[in-house]
Image 1 (cartoon, one colour):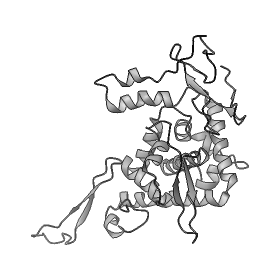
Image 2 (cartoon, helix red, strand yellow):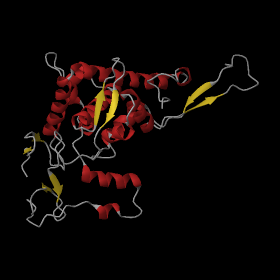
Image 3 (cartoon, helix red, strand yellow):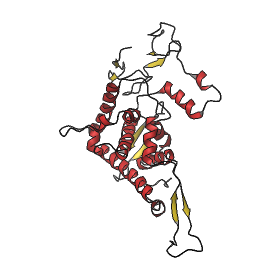
Image 4 (cartoon, rainbow, N blue to C red):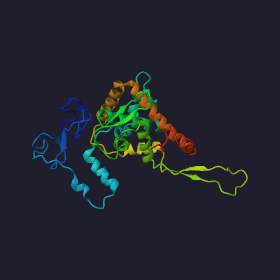
Length: 298
């Protein structure tokens, strides 16, 4: 197939072959079981090898016994891989923080530059949610009082399970705020946990007489999100075209509703700020248990 593909439904350019169009999310291709390449799903024969078209579902791979569960999921994800922005940005970070003093990306406008772990994490979350909204996998609904933005469920996620996009859909649900969804994803990925250590009954002079909070999380919030994005399986792609398509999707999301984009960026920054403060002082986990940005809200 040509490297420049066009969706037959919406007419937009597609960076890499895939089962669905990243713009309109309609089915456009399947994997041929004979040659293992993507081909037009409406044709009776494969465009590459000319064999009668039988879609390959890789069920025989999933059926292999003794395969590590995460490895098995990665193998499965290769079949359903979409060019998700979290995976693209995690691989090619610098280009999304472009700022030459005269021109800069909308992500620099929202989160600043240069990239650092906090900013990269924020951009990954922002781009993933923008992609899900544009693909119909979720909606962002402002309440009547102009307070928190709520997460509306959309169509079933059909992309990589091991991806930030997949985790967001998994944790999102009706009645939840976007803040709560982001919060849950981060807490789950970092294996968030803490314990309260009571002071001993017999204390030496100078020893504090109040409980202490010890962080038991396996990793930081930024490390957890970035690691998830970096291990996401992507379809074969050409870097420049994949980055161009990903940035165009983000740009269109921001242009469609700048106020929504800025509010989403603020929510993400607030949540990451809470985890950052927690990492510096776990005691805030007890002091701010009712905070909307904390992982204790259910």
